[in-house]
Image 1: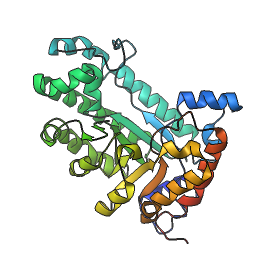
Image 2: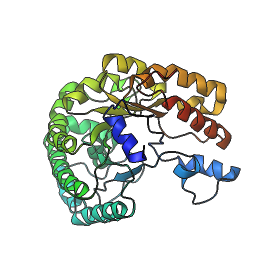
Image 3: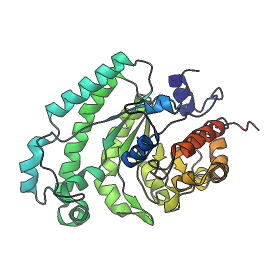
Image 4: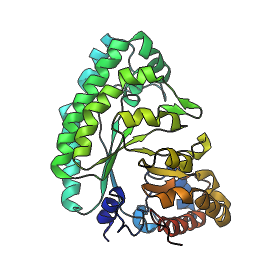
Length: 330
């Protein structure tokens, strides 16, 4: 079974699946790579090949041009009012960004026609936050509701143009809407706000994405479980990264949502503790692995306290346990 066939079989929940894909869905933390280079990791190495992982190419779809104003610090605002939005809008949703997306995807598709792919879009909670800033964004739901809707309408129309480009060249296995709209106690907004500012735009995009055979995921950190019914209503089919330290339990999710796809869910905070601790964590999530529709993996980026030796153990165990995906192979 080729790598591409394996992803297709996984998302089809095929009985012929030999194992779940073995991946790092999030690229490696720069601090982790810095630590590994000190241990002897060669510079410029293909990490997927080095660690024996399945190939998987992600495409991020830029919205802002290089000339767009940048925040003074992480989470700061670059706009507050509709007048500000008019000022920065020429740097958003532009032909320059679309041309870059097309060039990158076309070139990759020609060079790697058999490589599984996925793509990520800024979501309807995430992107306005990059404009209003973290604090200003939460106020904007109440103080600038019409502007919020205008931004998300512009974003939705831009995403439609991106989809036309994507499906001209590739057939991604899955995609994510990047949102990060939950924290360790639950959602950052109410169901009422979600229904008004986000749901209508999901409902415009997810049918097109799903019609092309691409599974639709939400990427949101924190305790996501209360939001799952919201997302399902919008045509979402899967969730990642399923952070254990926020209280997320992939076994509990599987019991409540048997058809939901999941990626992640493995507690990254045990990876530095050695094989026994890592195996115990795999045993914890084994019921979800056996249920199918679940790609176990780090519930975000591998931390820098994980040595190369321990990461090699993790990958070996990951390959061992993914063999149980969807079938009890005891």
